Each structure stands twice: as C-alpha cells, then as structure tokens.
Length: 291
Image 1 (tube, rainbow, N blue to C red):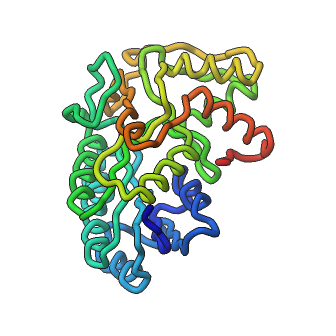
Image 2 (cartoon, helix red, strand yellow):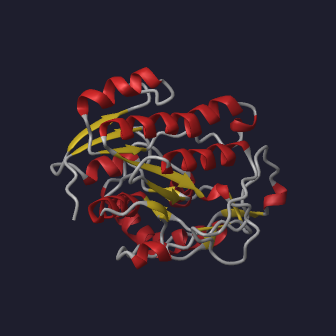
C-alpha cells in the first residue's frame, strides 16, 4: 500500500470533489481549491500553489462541463479540459506528484451494443468530447498518473447532476423528461471517491472505467428511482431524436468496470448505489448528500 499524505484537489465545490475531499478527511493533509481559488488554465497560478505545497497527489476535479455550450466555446472547453490538464500534469511531474484526472463516456461514439472497455478506441462526436479525450492523453503523460472515466454522476453535496434532478422531480411529484434510448452506467460519487482512494493506495496507474456496475436507460433509471421512493413515475419518455441538441451524445454509453475488478476493486451495482443515496438524502432532505 502506498501512503498518501498530502493531496491537492482542484475543482472544489463540484459534484465529485466534495466526496473526494470528505474521503480524505482526517487521513491526509488536503489543499482543496475551487475554480475561484485556482484557474487550472493559468500556468503561473498552478505552479504558485503546487510548488510550495509539494503534494503527493494532485486530484483534478475541475472541468468544463457545458456540453452544448462547448460547441460555441471550443477554446474555453479546450483550455480547461485539455490544456489545463496538461498544465497540472507538468506541475505534478515537477514536484514528483501523481496526477488523478477524471474522464468521460463521451469519448465514445455510442454505437456499441455492449459496455465499452478501456481497450475500445475512442471516437468523440462533439467539441466537449474531443476536449476531454485530449485531457486524458495529457494526463497520462505524467508518470504514475490515473485517468478515471466516470459518467452519470449523482449524490453531490454541493452540486447536482441530472440524476439528482430526476430524484427531486419524482419525489416532488413533478414531471420530467427522460430518454428511453440513451444507456448509461450511473455512478455514485461516494463510490467513485472510494475507488479513487483505493487505486492510489494500491499504486495503480493508467486508464480505468470507474462507474457503477451494470447499466440502464434513463427511463429504466427513473423507474427504479420511483420504485425505491415508493412514488408514481411522472416522467415523460422521449427519444434522443425528439430532443435535438447542439452536441451529440453517445446513445449507448455504458462502461465496463471489469478492469477495476481485476485489481481488487468491486464497484456496487447502480441500484445499490441509488438505494444508499436515497437513504442518505432522506436523512438530510434539505440538500443533496454524499455519504
């Protein structure tokens, strides 16, 4: 097991960062920086924080996530998701730190019929997807780095994703549109954070798919949320072709986490993760939770 005692986390305040920070509370010396505190596209600012702190690990939770807006703001998307990651990779290498970076299912074209593995060739279909793929490549240039592809995150304490909004709509009896033909592997931020820590402690490096076990359509996900909440499912089923969006989404985006399992890290099923999230949410109904 490799000891990690000093960690610098970017993107604090985001959906995943909060769980990563919480997972290291009382275990490591953590310097968590929000975008307002550290713009990862600013090379001088990155060096200003990294050099004196000398972290063992830099965990990058900062990302430009405006999928559709990226079509009109390609420079901004590339600066954050690609060149900002390159800046972090170089800063990590300069102080002998390992870099952890989070990728996305969007690097695939969505034309598969079985879950994508790490060996499947990417084929990004949008500016956002291209920027994230470049970021993966830059991150992997840093010695000992980890790139963890995640998707359909839920459970953030400080920020919310699409699944969180579906949960709130069903719980409140409001209608929400969901795709019947987009397939994903829902991922609980708590489980992703735990897997990140486990990989670091094992000294693993390289590319991993870090998602919940199994996959479902957004409609099937909504049905499971309604079932677990004991609420009627007031959702409007739609097809991807019914909602034309500026950026293409991979239709079948399920990811295989078998590689994680081969190194001894078993990700819970998305149904189990959802059950734990809803239980935690019930215990703290005034906000989304990650526990």
